[in-house]
Image: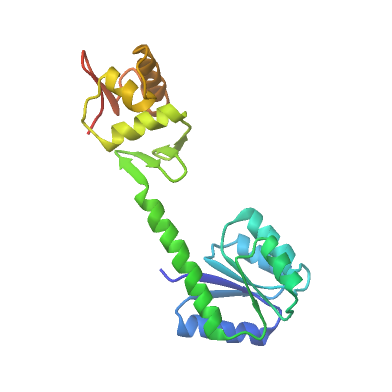
Length: 227
C-alpha cells in the first residue's frame, strides 16, 4: 500500500514540484492544502503517513498546524520554511516536528529524509510485533504491557500480567502453586495468594469465570493455559 503524504504550502509552484517528484518518481499518494485552516481540515478527514508542513502559512501558521496535528496524532511531520533562523528550527521541533528543511532544499535530500522516517517507523513496528504474544483471541503486548481480549482492553496488575504471560508462553504446561509462587513472586508464601490472583485474572479475561476457557485448573495439580 503506497504511503500517503499531505503537503501544506501556500506556494502552488512548490506544491506542484513536490507532488510531481513524490507521486511520479516515488509512487507516494499526495494531497495538498494551501493554508493552515484547510490543512487541519484535510488532515482530520483522512489518514496520512507523513506531513510536509511549511512554516509560513495564511490563516493558521505552520507552528499552529503542527501543534494541532501533534495533539491528535503521532504522524511524522517535516517542516519546510524559507527561514534559516535557528530559533525557527528549534520552535518547530518543540511544537512536535520530526525534522526540518530550509528552502531552497535539495529534493534528493528531502526524499532521503522521508525514506529514513518511514524506515525508522517500519523498524519500530517490526520490533514491536516481535514483542507480542497471541493465543486464541488474547493479545499481550510486551512493549507497553497491554492486554486485549478480542476488541476489549483489559487492565491487569503486574502479577496478573506476569501470570498470563507465563501461561500463554507455555500453553498446556501445568504449573503447581508452589512453582507459580517461585516464578512470579520469587519467594515461598501462602499458596492461597496464587488462587486469589488466578481468580482475579479469570474475572478480567474470561467470559464466564466460573467456566473458564483460557486458564484451566487441573484438579489436585495446578493451572495451565488451554491450547
